Length: 632
Ligand code: PRX
Image (cartoon, rainbow, N blue to C red; front, top):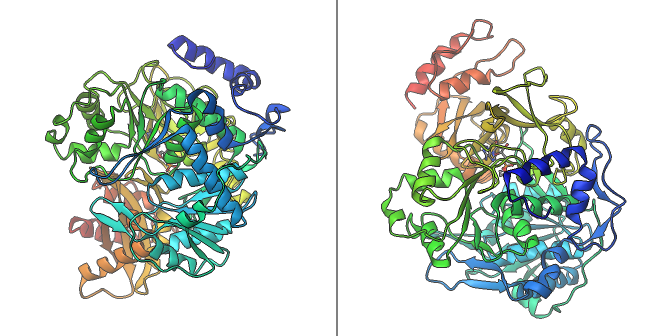
């Protein structure tokens, strides 16, 4: 089956993927270009974490994204770049042109000594060179690690050091609405702490003056003019690393999720085609940033593997005004539009005038990703953007899963407001109770686990398999624990209710509470801190920090500003607390563990059901915290 087109197809496909995954995925993978076919489609053991997909096969990712389409779609636009400024020219790359650019970039990397298995870090704005750069890595077997351009110098350095990255590709600066982001300047600060990086390639975007260190820093455009536009694709093993992508967890150190070649490729194409149902003349736009996994799988790999046209948008939803998304939809006649609930809520708050200036008549399919969507935002999106005729694919997945796991298939299986609905073929979800016992029957509420491996699954945390095991496979032994809570309705459809671990989902970005605490604790006047999430109208969740300091600051507001600036410097603006409460203590159990449940309730302004606090080491602190919260 090349494409699931009916509800019946879906039922058959899911059944076959469960009963005979070998045949299901083997048949699907026939369409790719292989240098050598696999010995076995899925092997190894899920519980032992040595699962493998397409073992023994040899292939190249970029060849499957580009070369495979040249004969049939060489002149079709592969990449459409919409700049930050609506008056600047759009850039279009056909499959042939993109192929050339990727080959040239691959040769630049090679000329700079990049070899198979080397890790190349990207710290860029949303410009074509970023997409070209990552695909070029896959051409020569280098591993890419994209660090979101909004991260700080410290965060970038931590990631380059962890990856032992040898090359950094960055921009002079990038545009972001009416501001510019000084990427090279921040990168310079990070490079001072990252000794493994020997080469820096700088793609010019803005033309601001930047420091270029002789022997280390090179302008990308100079290097490209010296590079040939043919580069033979490296023959990679199915399980060779393709990329790492850092994500937050429940300790301060970010985790480099490792994805490998053949399984991820299969998952990216399969999920893209079946969830969004993009057809030959459609125009698909995912508004994510390539710095996050959504951009990897659904701006770059999924669309290119499928021979679709993908839009890359440099700007932000509110520049020059809150109608920018809708203006772009009309300008290019976008048919498929995929964004985050936080963007929908932010635009909803700006009023309908910005929407109604545009026709939006080209839209056929809408999508959401990254966080639970509330009913009000769903309705607004459905009625005002989709004009009550476009299905909304609510796609649940994670950096770890490589691609979409639970979602309706647009126009094929029914959508349901606030529900991601059904598992894709290959996915076997289950709900478990606090003891790890499976909750059978419907409806049900529990913690969401996955009980078998699927092609796009992370192969581990780069350089730390113990942490991988501890984070995902020990809470409920033998199962992959997602960290999310979920509800299953009477028809077996899933609704993801949010994180149940120490991770906050702020505007669709995952932030570990420990990461923010580590940053706050670096202030010399901070003794201890505890960070929790609380409901936020636009961001979904906001960051609430409780902070104990050495002495009460004379100017509390100034002190809070200092704390915010510190978090900004250590992690980046996305992790700045929305609320900071100074307190003399934190509620602790007798073993010294912070009772986050209480802190969460107070932050949510729901103190009616705090539960039994008498067993706390310091029950008196609860009153102080409740009183203090009222003043924030
Ligand atoms: O809590 C879930 C939420 O985002 C988390 C994964 O974050 P990240 O790895 O950054 O990937 C985001 C893009 C895939 C999940 O554990 N999440 C993602 N999609 C949804 C969601 N929550 C509810 N509904 C969704 N559709």
